Image 1 (cartoon, rainbow, N blue to C red):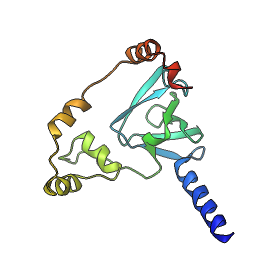
Image 2: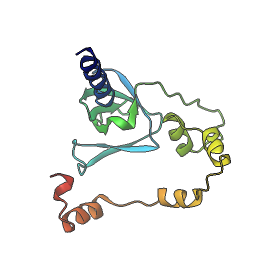
Image 3: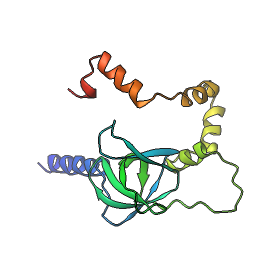
Image 4: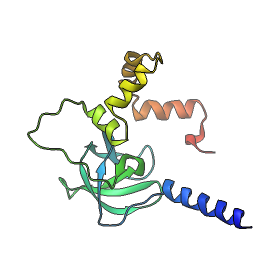
Length: 160
């Protein structure tokens, strides 16, 4: 009985980690290279504005998947962003200081990856084609093309 209770408690705790939401009025920081604030929570909602790594946002409301925010630099604008694209951990960008890292590297560092980790992985003998990964990261698909793909493939809007 105790084992079942402990297992249930661990599962409940794990669910809480993945179902994070943010407190109204708190500050969150963009933890990805760039993201679009959307007018609604739907994937194809209109874009309100673009935010970048390290931008500070004020939480208006939040649930387990999406948070409505307002950029501190544009308080009259608000929109929805995926919780996975923001963090409550403060990200500081020193103005005027030279940084020898791309915004992509900064975003990876914000997610817990670093140039040192990549170097260590490369030296482990694994043969990966990083040039191909870089090429694939540059591929973009417009929302209208994606919507057409979903419709033509009868994917039901990505939901069952």
